[in-house]
Image (cartoon, rainbow, N blue to C red; front, side, top):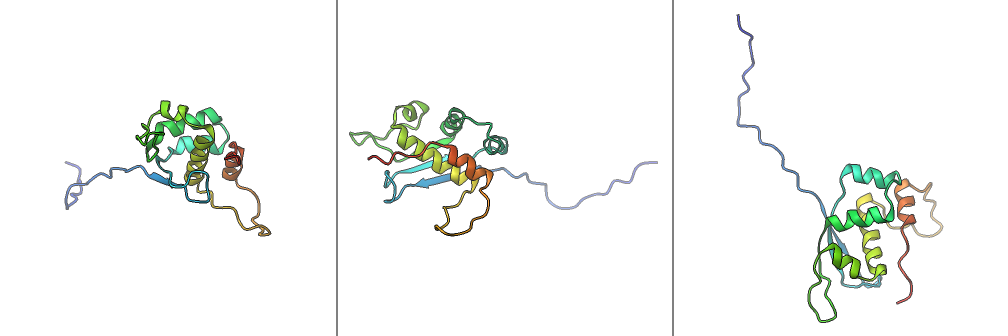
Length: 141
């Protein structure tokens, strides 16, 4: 007396290998960094929830960004590529790094561009509140 086990016909089951999303951040002529391009991987769901919930400090957000930085077209004063490292980030102007991190977080959280003035956008989302807490880019060039 054996158990009847159904036989499934077909090829072998193939697993899905995830390919984490990489955001390409492009700074245009309307920014202080025209031509800058930065590639950064996305956050894990747990990290994103931490940012949404306000559990991530600015230092935590910087660390998350530094871990996920993949590449950029940044050059030094002599035209040599700047290495893609935490140390290189720490050596750069804070305004530029903050602008990059802010743009990355906006992309990861799916925060859209602000609506035109006078438009009734409704309540501010948690993602927009967290983004608003990041220090602003300097207006002084």
